Length: 220
Image (cartoon, rainbow, N blue to C red; front, top):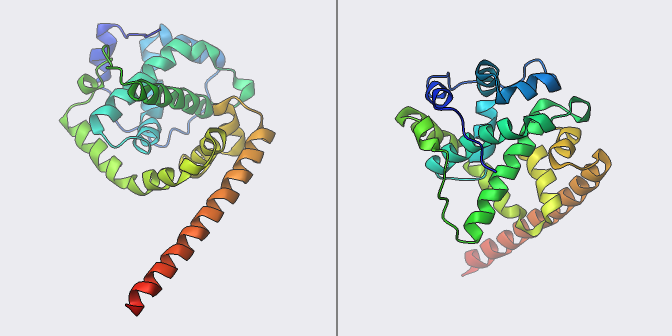
């Protein structure tokens, strides 16, 4: 189910400040988040708090600024639809939000893998003016190394990769990563341990191969 903002909310969203700080403000209660779908002011405050962290999450995973704008907007519309699912006792607000963002990115990847055209975008392009797109390009460039690291994670299982992404790239604690993925902290720790071990082995193997190749080239 796709959720759409009222026209007035969409128009006002374009006028909101784009910088949100680090997103680390006082935690909202479950009732506070439940209001997001009917209280435009509450939604605006939530957006201001988290838009930067959501954009960083997105551009670590995509390198097209227009797609990044679309997906960022989709995340916040998904928040309106799923705000009632937030449970404060299960973890921080940011962890829940990253779980929503991860679902949005995963859904987009599945659509693209099936070759389906996205017919009804919520028009992230309309929510982002030229300055916003330019800022996204800069942010995409800044996160290039993170995307390269993610390519090296292809040898991991989906579960291992997800935990490593959230902790190593997105800066979540193990407990918050577990919350975002809907698994226990114990399971997250096990997956993270396996992921780190496999990545260390991979990086070590890659380094040895590079050294051998360089030495062989030097002798020729």
